[in-house]
Image (cartoon, rainbow, N blue to C red; front, side, top):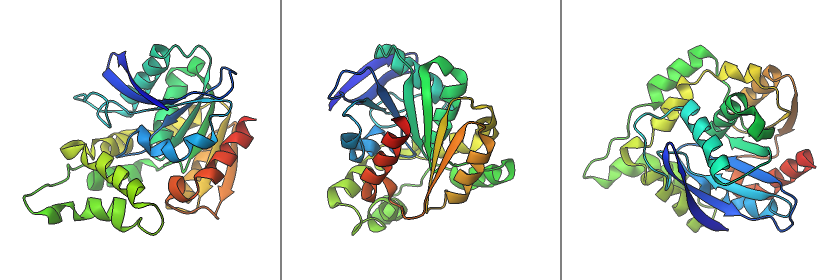
Amino acid sequence: MKKTYVETGFGQIHCRITAAESNQNKTILFLHPMPFSGLFYDTTTPYLNKNHTVISPDYPGYGGSDRIADISIEKWADCMAETLEALNIEHPAEIIGFHTGCLVGTELSLRHPKLVNKLLLIDAPYFDATDRADMLKNNSAPPEFTKDVTSLAGIWKMNVGSKLGKVTVNRAMENLAEHLRNGENANLGFAAAFRYDADRMKKITHPTLIIASKSNMYETSLAAAELISDSTLIERKDIEPPVFEVYAQQIADEILQYLS
């Protein structure tokens, strides 16, 4: 795996790229959830690069990419399109999203359809307008940091306290670091997600796989599958959070089976 930067209209975008072992001109583009970065998919990538080059960028405003003033799902989708073009990907890519990444993948497929072969949406956050408004109200405020380390308690619990025993210490700390590096901007991605009209999933025309794990996105994933005309739904109630740590290989197996 190599790390590189590409120039886009949204600034420099940091990418993690794992070359395919074979030369088949196949590409997977991973779209990360909030409030993390492309590093999130390091657990799954080693199972997927036999025949696919795997690209895991950081959205502008997150990870190692440049900051932008106004974050939105639409801008992220446009930026991911520019990233593929900057990397000289000349064939449609397989687009894989988890949580927020599902929304970016949706918009990428609608705004830049020629860049997309298939969509794979894992635990898709489809919420109606009322639920989105409530979540926007409750999740868009910047985190409050004080001189007292206890102000980090919520972030620590999310990334470490609730994960140890299920994931390695190093993995928990990596995700903690990616979360903390966003500072007061950590929740801007959540705000963008809850402002996004998820009903646009109805307009998806690409073949789409939806994987619903046993999580708080199970019901929303079923609802998303009903919206998308050319969708395949896989229900995996045997897979529980943290999905991409404990069940990386199982998720990769579902991905490869759908792409085969």
